[in-house]
Image (cartoon, rainbow, N blue to C red; front, side, top):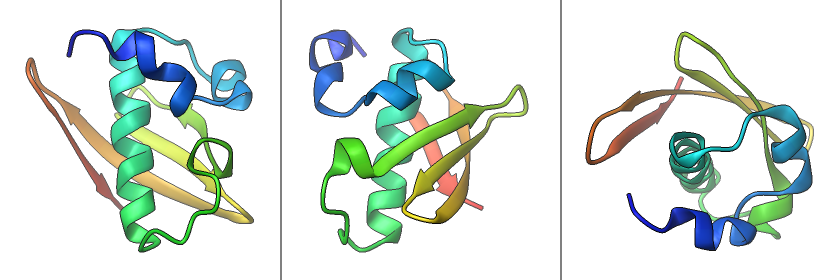
Length: 88
């Protein structure tokens, strides 16, 4: 989990920053959720950072992601050493 802050500019866009509080846990959530959606779309994302935007992270561990005109919802479980994300 160490050092993710250094690489955040590769996967966090300005809208992500406006929509949610950025901290170490949220960075791991953003990364994992964007990876899950990327895989759902079978890699058909032109600009990973810009084309996938986190709209919200709820208290019930649901993340809403916008990709083009589509909103995808993901659920996550945050453990001490890893995060599990799945599309719902």
